[in-house]
Image: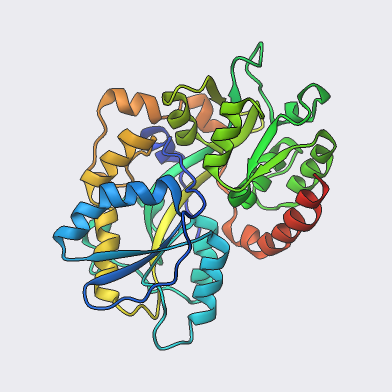
Length: 351
């Protein structure tokens, strides 16, 4: 398979901030499409709720009956790979982060995507295009902190190693791979290996960090005062701050990482035509604007223009852009399973 690489740096300034790593499932289910149904494999929580609110009306107009197959990314990827040689799979559309989408595309689990099947793809900014997926939302990981607990804004993830903050750092379990890349920057690493992240986390365990099952659980830990800082998407921080939590966020001096959450059509989709329609609906400008307003997402399509005040809210400064590093998808995907093994058996097992 071809190694796909994208340069997102240029787009960050004009359309960034869209941050939300979707949450853990509300309920896991296996569904089979029939008739006008389209089975969408996704995370649960806020992301699924907003898919229903903002993409649902367009899907309904198209005659689609959307059934969500809710679960974490890892079992969703496993299902795609396990079923790829089946005549018909149990999922039509799969939603994944860019690292995971690259992984399943490389395993030949997805249809190639073009503007013929997805007309709105013609409006997507070049920086987000891939041969195998559509880009739904885009973000960067930041260091989120409780401003009432810090006299000055923390300027590095290394502050989590300070004994004064023992037990006060939180992680979302479903973001394990992004967490590893992000904190690895503070250990002097780049964005082509999880090894620096292992080094940092192995040191951090001495300070008793906490791992929560979902992004919403991280928010609850902030609210209770159990944690004072966490690695999280910018839009999540905006959402939680708007909800009244005393939070701010920074891009550390060592840098941050971008991320795109994408949608792809399973190669053995039972209802490919409906799947293409749903992916096209995800790129509709009306839904993209709603995600920006509600969750800090910026549109990935050119024909969804943000009002100036909203753009100022979700964008990044020139200085911040310089510290957001693209990563090597192939190198990270090649070592992601090894890092997951470390995350579960060595990092989480020691805290």
